[in-house]
Length: 140
Image (cartoon, rainbow, N blue to C red; front, side, top):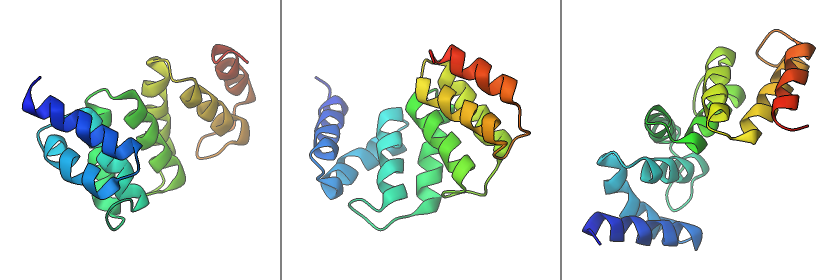
């Protein structure tokens, strides 16, 4: 096993065990090196102040980096950030873009969130038909 695989596995284990400062120590260098799973986990820790002080700028930076590299959960996370105005200015168009990308990778939660946005007219023009269509696609 390569050194960074060991560090990744150790970092993910530390994250799962809620040893966030250790996880940050191990995953930060991997995030810097472009590892998408490490970027996603660092984003979550910075977003929620786990193992370090909350840092919205770094949370957004890492979530966006992982999302742009095709990480489905990060794409959903970035959609959430744009929808809620969490770590970034609210932006309905960007939220729809990222939820749609995540949904195209099979994330049902992204489809249902999109459906809810259209159902309520939250940051998008209300479209109950589109909402129904998305829920049907999600299996509801």
